[in-house]
Amino acid sequence: MSTNVFERYVAWNTVVHRLDPRTKLTFMVVLFISALLYASPVYNLLVFAVVLVAGALGGIVQRHWRTLIGILVPVAALTMVLWPFFVKGGTPVLDVSPWGSWRIVLTREALAFALAMGLRIVTMITTVYIFLATTSFSDMALGLYRMGIPYRLSFFVSATLRQMESLMEGVRQIQEARQARGESIGDGSLLERMRKIARLLVPFMTISLPRIEQLTISLETRAWGTARERHPYRTLRLTTADLVGVALAVCLLVAVLYTRFVLKAGLIPGITL
Image (cartoon, rainbow, N blue to C red; front, side):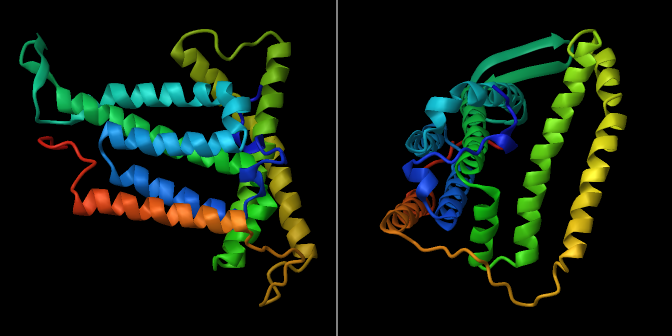
């Protein structure tokens, strides 16, 4: 299965797929805010659980769990390994001086904060993945436009993601062509692999520049951008499920703001960055 995030959309008949793109965008923003406000592994885990429920309702967790694990595990592991060394304060669990005056101190609070940061990044990546896997690019552009985003910006966001899909497919074809000639990018030392990846730039530019030029010519021939007011041929209507989704998003946002700023919860006391 390909791990290209930009080619994940399949028009399944699920609750999440049928939702209005504005509803999904609203929920995604609320989940981003929730993940960013909390710095406690318990609260970040609760937000991640909400994301998993949404992914399960859309059939993404069941069908794409291998791809998600392949993306999330390395990112979360790297985050949780690096963060403890940048957090100060708390109860030490490890205090060593392996090289003279260089001292390594790991605290219980720092490890908890690192876990929270790993869950935060995993939550945000999974949220975007689910959104891209359940929303077509045209629906995304139309939803952004109906939410008040200028049409030019909405179109460019959709067009950029669409071009990323084709460019990633081009990279995959280049890699397969080199592997057919007996060259493996994953073999050799780190420097050798970097050199092999650098050699992909020339064929990648050869593929990508004509596609960008074709898109530019297509827009110019259609006099794109001359009309001051846009009239999309499709209309978006909020259904009962959309209203329920927006209500749940608002309730989640209120609960997050209340626990974070009124109850002063969701933080790890006694640490500094």
